[in-house]
Length: 148
Image 1: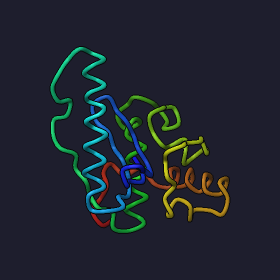
Image 2: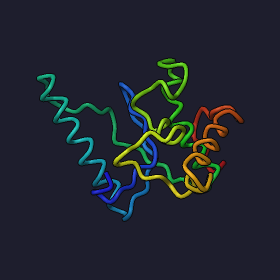
Image 3: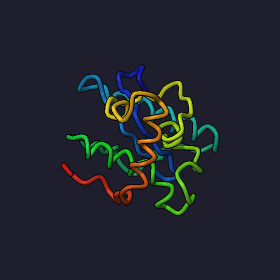
């Protein structure tokens, strides 16, 4: 989505919803990117399954992330979604999430590592180790608390 002026820092794709942690570059970047992404996916899905109409119940919702702790809580919440839903027992076992990128250094051509993540260590190994430690130190939040 960065070609739409949006840097994606984390994601989870579920069967009935999705989560992104991202940074829009302008005030119009986010709505433009979401319109393109959701419109293209709906067209693809409808062609593939011979159907028409919308796939989504509602417009996307965006919440600003105001501080570092809140950002890290949201990142963990997004990547823990498949575990919390009972789909997998550990986040590294779910393919459609950014967890393995952050925790194990799995390569990605499009995910943009956020400065807060990069600040977890000087090397990729240090960042990955620190990120995994964040998961083991506190329970994963069951929501992104406002201003926590």
